[in-house]
Length: 313
Image 1 (cartoon, rainbow, N blue to C red):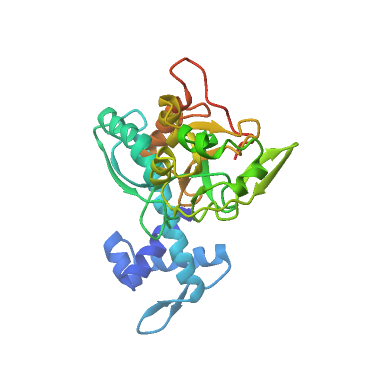
Image 2 (image 1 turned 120 degrees about the vertical axis):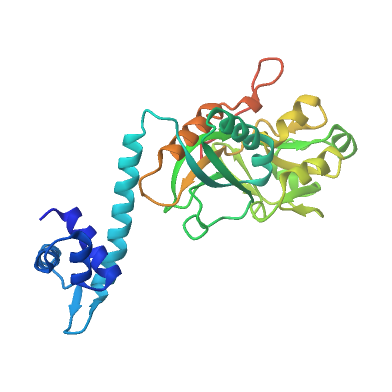
């Protein structure tokens, strides 16, 4: 017996609740359906359907197997559809989640360009810094920026961004410039929460260590903290995708450059290990090509580059 055909027949029996109904639908004898189900049960080694004179019902194993059959056949159909359309333009809907500041500053323009390049692909974009549940929320993709991922995350790295400590010239003129991360405890620091509540990491004498910091202003948005930094309210640690323009304009300066901070990885997170639709693969490739490990926002107008992080995420 062909296992895939057996799965399809099993799904029909589960949905219609009758061997006879499936037989009529397929225009075959009822005995054909009965034999197919019996052969499938023999091959998997468990009873899938409990039979009685009046009705059929799934066993506990049958109910679990039904969900797996649906997933497998859905993946198979998606793979076949992609192969059939491999030489065609991608089409369909992509629902994705992106971080707020990085999304607005850098991903939104790229995603708009993508929609122009691929007019048959529709996109729904959720701008949020919360950790979304991809499967539960019906999302095909999430872009996240982090030093490290959860071991269970299914992800592809599409780029990186350095982290830098910055302050305005006015703040440094008033309070002096720290020359070692240990001196930050005596400065007003602007904290991105909850990520930075344990302190700021710097590479000192070959060891990455967290240094305690304090301050009156905390926020969960990097752009708000950048504005506070520009206004001279304190020192902040920012990814270069937020700080690059202000550094180039001179409204803030990098400090403690002799003590690198860990690099941030930029990742495309997927729901699980399922087959990835062609349109999603093409979008991930598109973003990876345009971001990469040496992103465009770190190129200074002079042609130089902002310092890279001490380690990759």
